[in-house]
Length: 304
Ligand SMILES: [Fe+2]
Image 1: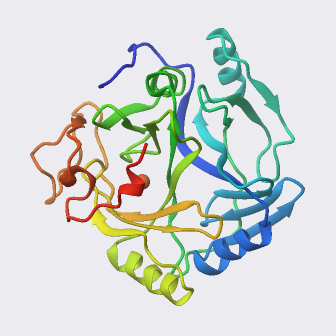
Image 2 (image 1 turned 135 degrees about the vertical axis):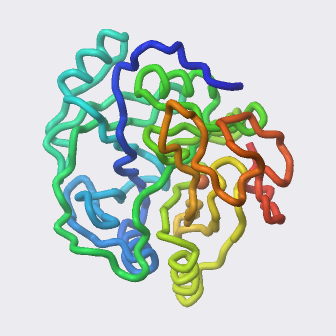
């Protein structure tokens, strides 16, 4: 599978991944994990849940009461106005709801349902500032990407490209697609599966390898052990580690993700660890070097 975009103007242009929501039977436990283990800042407790941030935006993670589910909502910031997005999405045949009661930190959002997964997506213009000043030595710099299973990969890829303005970045085999909405290699990735559903993993960006190691030492002190990594992925070339949060959601901490500074040139900013120069978006073989250039594989994270 390659770029399935029709080439026409998308209805909306997403500018960044804003937030992800988790539902959990134990809100306090997950808030504890995010604040004490990952060093996020709790900005606000509201009827909709606990709102936490990595710094700049009012929130990058929302934790609310319910059955255990990662990626129960995904919020995307868009270029242009919510009013334009509403009009264009309706014209493209999508049901959208404009709401001003989404929660604190945002004036209004368009709510629509992600095809094939049923996950609500929130599209919004901007968030309030969190008021959190600066960065601590541990805290991740931002929410990087959320990966999910889908029973209909090409439908979902087409939706993200044609409706939300994402670009194709890479595919592994015929089952794992990486999509970007800005220079970062991927903000959304989807794995085809008729067996599994829901979130595959959520990923937070670290400044550099030293920052990542500092947080890994902190995780160990808090008795969180890695289930995979450190290693380096083929697609995106990010240095990665994976562990589980208290709900069993898979959490990736990463750094050195590929970036595309110039879409007209169309290749990833060259890095010493690339396989070829220049390196363009491509379809990768399903082999060990694709999954982890450095070596070991955790088969659980490839199951689909
Ligand atoms: Fe990832």
